[in-house]
Length: 206
Image 1 (cartoon, rainbow, N blue to C red):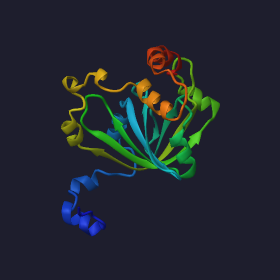
Image 2 (tube, helix red, strand yellow):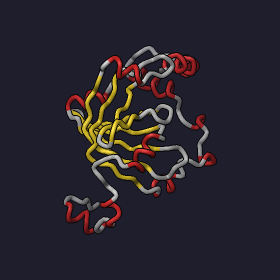
Image 3 (cartoon, helix red, strand yellow):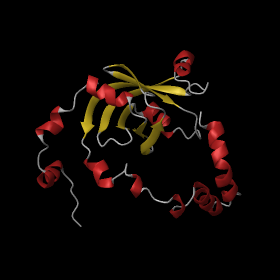
Image 4 (cartoon, one colour):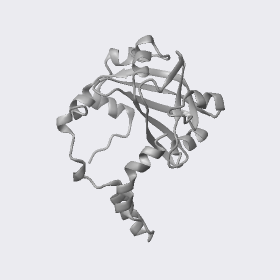
């Protein structure tokens, strides 16, 4: 199979970008882009470190991303399993990429910038939910922002409830973890994990 190995070969297949695809990218957060970001409840954060690339989901009620000004946003980091892959990557390489999504909306916002991890108590407290402050706050200096048209979400029909699958057709988290545990001779009760996880989620989501 032929693989593309140069920019020239790539452009020969795809041609040149539309003018609009270029001039919609700006180096700051416009009022329109700010409106979208402030109403987003979910984003995907891309980072790269010494072990490679990582993409990590982030979500909270709409408005959880603070737009400080046209060149800076802040995102709370919540408690989790302490893998902290994204944070480790940011320590090594501050360059990040973000896609913002809003349920039911086809367009997305893409943002690039340089991140730093802040742990000031007052700042973390300002992002508190249910009395639980953020573990840290990602402060991102913006270098590029643009909107992505809705073709990808339209093709996937992501927001159409009639296309949502029955979760019973998928392996559970416990089953997946159990398979890995078995391969490593680790004692793990998959059924108990799945049964108890809803209560665990309520206690640890914040």
